[in-house]
Image 1 (cartoon, protein in one colour):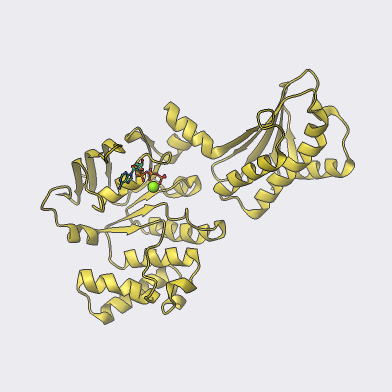
Image 2 (cartoon, rainbow, N blue to C red; image 1 turned 60 degrees about the horizontal axis):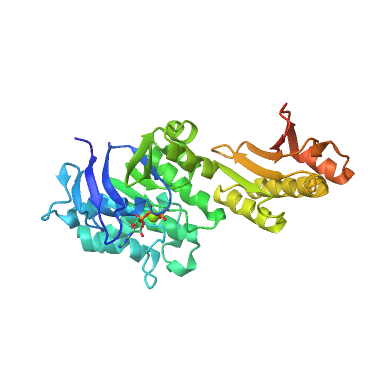
Length: 359
Ligand SMILES: Nc1ncnc2c1ncn2[C@@H]1O[C@H](COP(=O)(O)OP(=O)(O)OP(=O)(O)O)[C@@H](O)[C@H]1O
Ligand SMILES: [Mg+2]
């Protein structure tokens, strides 16, 4: 039997059944990333695994024990399964080290001294030893999340569950938390992680599970799911996280709305500031130089497509009409900027111009 084995798991709420028969297994050392649209039961699934939620039916075996049984030993389960939430859940009136010592004393029966030395060890592991005596409020979001990870690790769990551990953080703090999670993967920690971060999933996942329709809709390696999804819903979800588009006609040339929407997409992809600025600058120059003068005779739409790790960013301008709006002469400064910031990807097709953004 696998280390975690989930069979026919159902969870019904009064008016919705987010889990309608979930089956999957996790081996020791696996890093399983769960992805899927909002509301498809990812958090509910994670919460069922450590019994913060009671499943309606089905079985969850952890280390051979069915934790869904009525007489399941929940405290023993919680010792085996560490959990890190989106919102840190640190006690605000206790210092960081107290936060990490408390569960060890309460649940594992450790002495203060043992708990303290373990807490310091785990704080060091997440690079926070200097913050042991700080209060949670004195830490940045990224530091709080690392402290929450240290608190879970101090219990020596056999598996760690993460529910969108970086989604409440400013983009600048995401990397430090991701690096801690990467290190855990290198150490061979068994993990189940709900995340939309493809780059993280691509780097560390042994398997990616796409959830929809209350089931594990499709699963495979990161390559299978992100580059070569077989099923339609997986494909459209993955495209949405790698592609942004904007139809200028429908949106009546709302330039502010368009650039804000693209910026939001770039941020959701955790682009660097330099990448983000390049995308916005190129959009701005192309829009003012080519689109505005030609909008009487053409319809336009923009598409920004990024590779999984943001190392390739392509901006495509689709246009209608018989003439090529990119043929016209433009202001030399704008031309210089566009030339410096992009490579035009030659395409024979009339009706589209593809620019690769140079970072
Ligand atoms: N305690 C609850 N009572 C009633 N409905 C709930 C409860 N918890 C979750 N739900 C509903 O179950 C569905 C699945 O919720 P869940 O939070 O698991 O989704 P999710 O995939 O984690 O979404 P997101 O990506 O937004 O975090 C949602 O429709 C949600 O409203
Ligand atoms: Mg959720």
